[in-house]
Image (tube, rainbow, N blue to C red; front, top):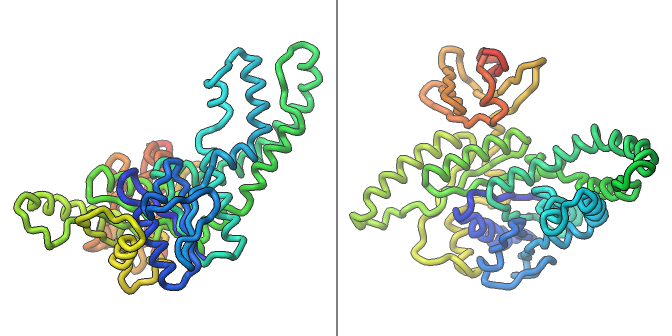
Length: 389
């Protein structure tokens, strides 16, 4: 069973890559599902077919689905939303503002992950390709299971007990609505629906994330940032796919400077994504929509490779808490002490090992800290970040 999460900045071609990957996997005999979690669905446009909330068969081995997250939200959050609406009504906030505040950012998309879990457990598919929302929404989406897990373990029991204690007292002195047990039970059911999602998504044998980008400075910078944050939350990235690269057959002098710029950006990609497979897709001379053209994209992208395989094995870094410090651990196998150099530049960490250099965008939590020391221990570079200089 394989789950492939395809994400990237809006407009880079991630839906085309998702659809082409699914077509290629289906052509190789895998029972394949491609599903969109992007609220602004474009998967149906890529296939030039109509898809709904339920899987629709495209070929004998391929199905496609565009999740209606709003419908799923109504099913699982309705009681909690009504309780919050009552509270806002009591406070004087009414209308569309109150309705917007009863649904927290990212909650609609979270039910897409529930669908992924359900499909994995069903055993109906060998490969599930997820056309994710643009990177910012994807990061929020993938971090939610961990955040909600912390809340349910630490805060939920306390909140429920407090509500039981204060409800009788408040009812005597104020008309402010206080959540009853039915609301807390609805929250618990909501959380139970998320059970098992994180275990599926952080298992590198099951799930891999693939970053799609164009050879452009700002797009590559966002992809690098996404790469860091996916690693921070424990998600394995196995490929960086650079889309719309000018092919060698384009010889018009007008594009000569563009080719030079793209070569410079490709060098940046190779430096920033040295631990994962890097794949290029040329800029096609026509819009690649419809199953036949998607098949062409999939063939060029993977050639003789299995699209469902893990395209790279590396887990480039991990983070550990040690007392008040945070240790950023980079795998550098076979490195000798004299070969390694570490340099900090703003929110960027540059690690040099012999002739090779890695550039890593630091997450905000580390960017605010100072590098206290760096040690090479049994093939791992351990960089300690401290709050104090």
